[in-house]
Amino acid sequence: MAEVVEVQPLDADRCEGLRPVVLEIRPAQRPALRPDEEQPVRTLLGVLVKWPATRAAPFAFGLLAARAPASAGAAAGSAYRARKCPTTRSAHIIEDDPVGSSSAFVEWQRALHVLTSDEAAAREWRRLRYRFAHRLGEALVGSADSEQEVKGPVLYGVWLHWGLLYIGQTLEAQRRLRDLPIGESHHLATTFPPEIWHRVVVIEWSKLPEATALIAEFSLDLIGLALEHGMQVRLRPLVNSERRTSAGGWRLVDWERSQSRGARAAVQIDMLLGAVQNLWDEAAKQRPGSIVSPVAYRVIFPERLVDRPAAP
Image (cartoon, rainbow, N blue to C red):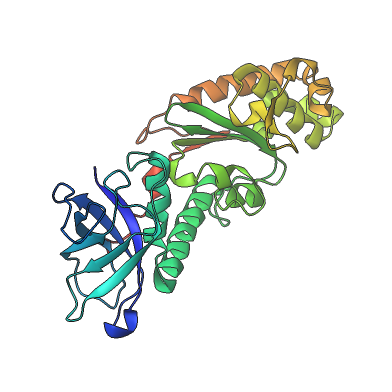
């Protein structure tokens, strides 16, 4: 089975331009005992996955693991000699795969190491992500000089491919929605990167006729909290369904027994909640490319706004 490791050359001063690299290593032959060794020697083929920008195009080279037990494979701490430089170079594994190369988490972690492998790559990664976040924020809010700009109080939801992930509300759509994919003042994007969000729905509930009388009686803040609670109770999105604990665990949210301001006010906004639910259901059925001109809601498909990073 192939595995990807990062190696740090031990004698970089003897081979110009050597820096840590990320390699995919595949077994090239069965382990064998050499006459002068007490442990099997494992011969491996290393395929370059990421090389510093100062180097030439990717290439393949042979690696020889010295005193690597057959049962250990390419274990952390094994010494390698690469037959590439004019002088023999050694390498030391900095990080190994503790759970197997098929692990999606390990592949995700390694991909991030590749995308941030040096200062230039890290800078480009940061800029790439912000370009996307800015583009998504503008799509959610609209241009500031446009009549279609989303303003004031909104209710919004975020979907992954399998279904609804999160429901939130804000009184400051212009700021909050632009910040949503950046994550600097919002927790959602730190756990579920916006590059994998499938759909975002924004509903400007204050534009609905059912909201007029309520706005005259209650504060916008209270109505927004009540709508948020009511929709969470009906749809039970994953992120809203649990709360972190100080012990490092999670506790389930009991919406039915909640005594929050939103929960107490939710019973007084039934008509508005029903109208929002109808718009929500309509927006959730929209597909990319649909031609619609809704007055009070907006549907964005973030994945269609992603820039793919250039190949190394």
